Length: 199
Image (cartoon, rainbow, N blue to C red):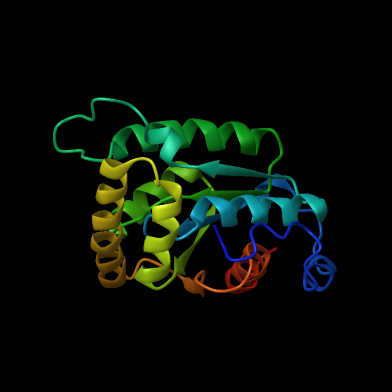
């Protein structure tokens, strides 16, 4: 969790941000991919971005990509079931766009340029990638809280957090970066929207 938890929609910067928003037609749809290592807060921030869009009257959808890949066993050579993720993402985002969503907010992991190309194709909308960053010590504290009764899961996530952070730093797939290690969730969500140039 972030230090102050989810601050909801009463953030002082919200009215300033929302004042510039306006509804768009589906052909102007855009997607925002929140990238980052495990425990950095991608899903929590994505939900808050969705709340800001809803209060501004922007048709949108928020998708946690972990659920679109969650299938066992993963096929040989596809450790994190990326092929399943792409198939499901193409279908799910297509339904949301057909229903009139003009903004797609995606929380997940994108490790290299090849994955970016495949994910952008599956989404079917202009894609902006924003990486959430935080010190590993902050991430480790969050993971310890999240997996306090799951020692094996905690050990895996602690190891993966550093490994993935290094991978993402080398890959340079992101269009912008936002500090997710300090401030409230609402602070981070507003910073993400500004960095992405939305709406």
